[in-house]
Image 1: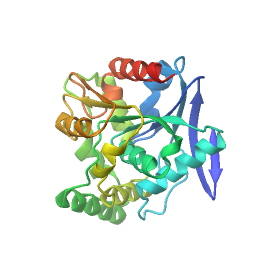
Image 2: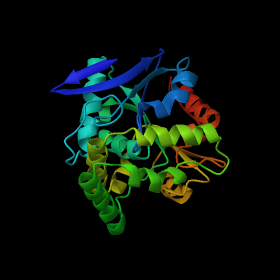
Image 3: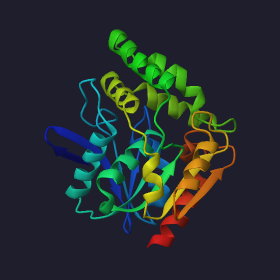
Image 4: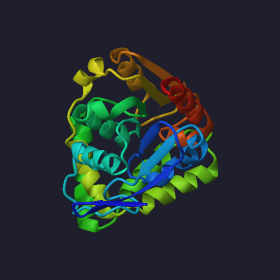
Length: 262
């Protein structure tokens, strides 16, 4: 399906009935990372999974900064178009940054919050510079291959199935340079959301992977300590893309969480 607003088109899946669940993908990926969730959760809830602007089949960007707030605005407009007044937001990694930006701007639209393999703190200075350097390299070369090569081996845990690793690398490799550049610059510019955490009023589930080398479980534990009405689940042997690495365990956690909201 496609939604168009102010020249920006977002491709999305919208499957199932019940509590709306908005799945916000990570970087540099697209909505197909949620295939196991769309298949496994559509009998539990209404699953809405968009490609963010610049990724997948959605409209490209110009390579300049797209802030987490802008992605969030796109998603709010998508929910408006679908007549969804409230949704459970589930964001993984960059998707978690966007979910927190959404909560900051549109708290009344959030029924529940799932933060997977993400953090509330901003980049360190060295990480921020690394993102900006990578964006500049992509602008110069026109290729995302260096980013893909540096990240692909860190996305899954040591027990991930080989076919999952192939799917992740393929998904990363097909993302367009301009969209990747915009997201790198947007993530580098994102603010510290730590002060928001104690004021989150909706039920919250934090999911981590014990084998996540990009955002370690300790970051999730720190968030849980700050968020009221919050549960933390650490999936054994799951890497950064816990939803793909250990899809059944991820789906079980989400299904139980949503069941308590319905």
